[in-house]
Image (cartoon, rainbow, N blue to C red):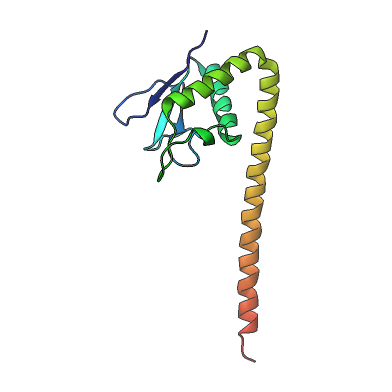
Length: 145
């Protein structure tokens, strides 16, 4: 049985290859990340498959707002490592019973994220084109005959 290992991230420590990071502070606490930041936990998996499974469990918990009621603190909200661990462990138990369905849903989610990135790129290009046209309009409207 695969175990869940979550620790507070430290710059001084060396970590194995099969890991990712969870943001621990702010309203995005619980968001999984590939690269560390000062306020994060490190989730270590036994192998690449386990890492994949844990990453998408964490992503779904974060995106669905599961961590929001667990946030503490009045100025900068933060997520306790034990609360994050408990939620992930609960979800992991459910996923183990429904693995094929979980993988199908992860694939759908990946496709949506890919589409979102494509649309983001298109919106940036549209904004660049609008700015360029606006500059041309300004130059036309300010030219003297």
